[in-house]
Each structure stands twice: as structure tokens, then as C-alpha cells.
Image 1 (cartoon, one colour):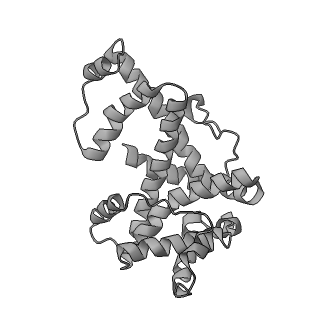
Image 2 (cartoon, rainbow, N blue to C red):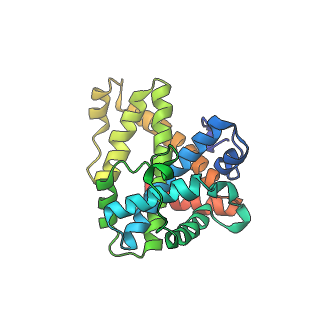
Image 3 (tube, one colour):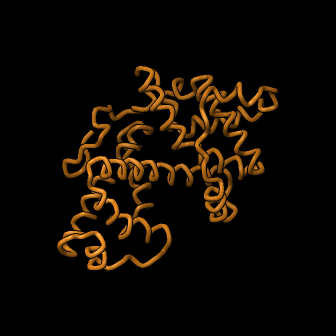
Length: 248
């Protein structure tokens, strides 16, 4: 898929309409596995946040999220049953989660539920810090906010991987120091001259150019992630504009 300014991402072969879901239905085993892992990575934190806001304790929320992904998302092929005409994918999934919790008392062992998949909630403390910034927002609003952040995180992950694989780690380090770290921590961005010295760049202008290259790639990747889970040209545009504000 093409992005602004002729950007083409590593997933440019993919269609622009719920591509991850389509890969779950029609892809080979490797493609289905990759699609399932990507969707789980994007959604797991939002599910955890929603459960915590519903009053679940940390361990209980993690267990319930684990069971939901294993039993419903993977075990019952939730995403494969999703259809664009039913609305946004995350809303379809949140409805299924709400229904699933009613049946969560079923006595099944964790080994039976996992089906070889471990929910990627590797940093519970980070998730708790996020919840602490939500200021008493209702579960649905927290789910939406965490989903938006997770979507941006997925685009950032793909962007970093792209530059590392291309042997242009300095580009990513420049962007991380100049844009990403200050956005996350509130710190003042380091001067371009300082970055030029640490990255062995010829001039501060070269560092500024490197940062712009990464920003363009990230923009294309954010559009890619949105296109993979949102159908309809207008909805994709609305979603992209909403998520792009996270990167400002």
C-alpha cells in the first residue's frame, strides 16, 4: 500500500480493507499466525484496561484477558467471523468480550485455554501507569484510549524494525531522541548539533533530514495499521486523523 510522498511499507502487498482479518480467513498457516499475533498485540492492552476499569484486580484482569483471547479470539475464530458491515472491529470485539464475561465461570484449565498462545501483557506496571492517567474515565473510554495508543505503538514497532533491518539505525535513534522520547517523557528535545555529534552525522541539517525520513515512514505505517482494522474510506480517514494527534 502506498503512503504519502510515495512511501511504500513492508506490507504494501496487502489490500486496504481489513487485511489482517482477511489473512486469518484466507492466508496460509504462517500468515494466519502472524495476523493473529498482530491483532492480539494491538488489542490485548485495551482489553486489559477495560477489565481493570470494570473492577477486576490485576491478576484477575490478566487471567480474564488471557482466557478471552484463547477461548474466543483464537478458539472460536472471533476475528474470522467479523464483517465490515457490523461496524468497527474493536466495537465488535468489545461486545464479544462483554458477553464472554458472563460465561467466565466455566471450569477450564489455563493449559486448555492457552492453545499455545500467551497474551502479550509483558509490562503490567506500564499498563497500570496508563490506567492511573485515565482519571476515572468509564471502561469504554479507557478501552478506546488504550486501543488508540496500541495502534500507534504498533506503527512505531514496525517503523523501528524497518530502519533496523535497512541498516539505518541512526535514523531511528535520531527520531527517538528528537521526537519520541520527548513526547513520552515531556523532556526537552536535545539540540540537533548535539545529536549530530552523538550520531556521527556531518551537520545538524543531516540529523533533521533523518528525522523527517522517519516521520514520513511512520505516517505511512500508521495509515497501514489503520487500514488493516478499519473499513470504509471515511472511517479510515477519521481514525487516522484521531491517531495522528497522539504523535504530535
